[in-house]
Image 1 (cartoon, rainbow, N blue to C red):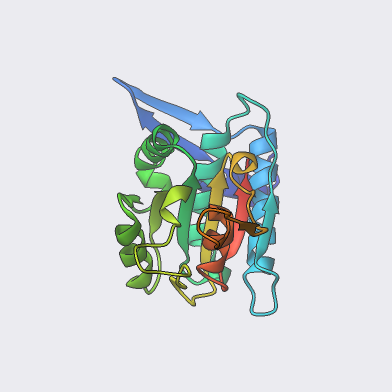
Image 2 (cartoon, helix red, strand yellow):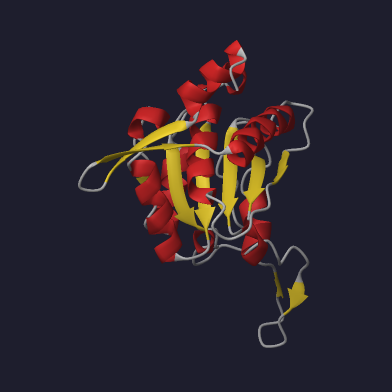
Length: 209
């Protein structure tokens, strides 16, 4: 713990302050600290021009402190010079989970250095990503990766290499890559994950169930 580099890293990126009537200080536990450090290296490798764009999976049991870990991960990624001021897209599968995680991030401003934004519609998600040259934390539900009226295919939202997608509860949402034939419409349909990954071929994704 008191190795100089490790200790300074812990103070800088693994301490959070929350307000709930009083100021509460929270620090990362052993598993959160080492998971974040490993995840950062994986994301950096995946986001290189020759990377596979797959950051990996961090598996948790219930009550393991996933939200705090994700906030620490976000803060570390945003300040890593190798990612050149990345944009983070936080993807959940339910509105209540989106709001809950957004609240954790909104209260961790000192750690993150900026305030997160919530995409409230499919179009707003596209606007937030399409017009953003760098930086930012965007929250969205996976359902917003859906085609709009008149679209046959979900469009690429960005060609940047340093957009990091972090999926919460990914084991509930990362199905649907294979097309299925809709007997009513005669179309081949895909699930939301297919569209989400296809929307930015340059995106490095960290799936965090």
